[in-house]
Amino acid sequence: MLFHITFPMEGIDVKKVLLLPFLSIPSGHHQAADTIAEYIRLIDADVRCEKLDILSYGFGTVESFISQFYLKWIHWIPGSYSWIYKNAAYRDAHRERRYLIYEILFLRLMQKLISDTTPDLIVCTHCLPSRLASLLKSRRLLSAPVVNVYTDFFINAVWGCEGIDYHFVPDLHMKQALITKGVAGARIFITGIPVHPHITESNNDRTAKGGRITALLTGGSQGAGMMKALIGKTRPDGNIHYKVLCGKNNRLFSHLIHENYPHVTPIPYIESKAQMNDLYDEADVILTKPGGITVSECIRKGKPIVVYHALPGQEEINLQYLRSLGIVIDWFDWHKEDIEEKITRILSDRNVAGGLQSNLSHYKSQMADREMLSAIRHVFNHS
Image 1 (tube, one colour):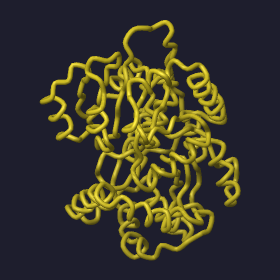
Image 2: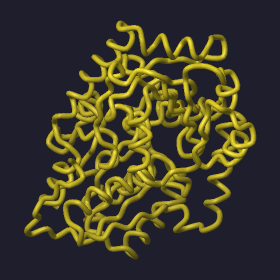
Image 3: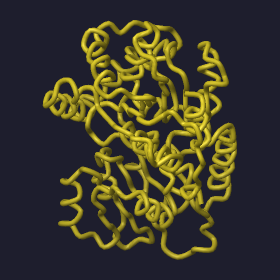
């Protein structure tokens, strides 16, 4: 299996890798960084991986306030966040922009962080540290190679490009977008959005399983979305059992424990990827938001993906792209339908289920360019 593969790495001069997500909340940027660190350990256990958030590093407790403000903003005033994100970071993303406020606040801090940690390789899983590292490289103030690891199905305008040495992208579409911006194709590796090696491919044949349907309902690490309302519309005496990943949403977990629904199993935040893999294996369908990591895990598992909600900004843009590929079902009007009837129809209709599986198989075939292990190996050998 994938996570037993190792490569002898004679002559590696990479001893320390600095992984740079942003903010301390357990977002997809952190999960991607952790996954990259796991792959590096499979290649060479002696390489030291250090994960740092530049905001926490430079401003301490202020980071916690900003993280909480961000979470409240996207839930209380989602329209404003969506508008600002699309206009500031997505619209005309092909054009090179200056973000002077980021340079003023963070560029010297980024220099200090790198001076303090002395990395041999820098891996950016968020656009802000990527922008800063790119600027430093372009000004010859940074010599260590830098890798962008993208965690959405598009590239926003904040990501650094000119000074970045390597790019790990989800698919051929994003590779072509970078080539259009002038990046050499040899520096772009199609790896998929990072999925932990403990999330393995599985057989998705329901015909052999039969019986009751298991739906895995998730709102990402924060337990965001409209899970409480959705569960409230399900049938306790129906043929679907819902396993609800509550993430860090303790209020949702406590609510579901208190209600003690016979057809619902609430699950608190899970750190173990092996346990998460088992939950995917047990599920017949995934009800989710279109976060890059979760969708990519579902793609690897070959599971039907039903999107019931999207957070403003990144997830809205992800959904547009995933919908165009035909690999997810967009179901925002679930509150107007019989949920059990809809899910059963999705799984039993050969045209719907077969179309999803066919589109998914076609999409996965694009990732034959380079797998994650070989991409990291290439970076190490050429650092």
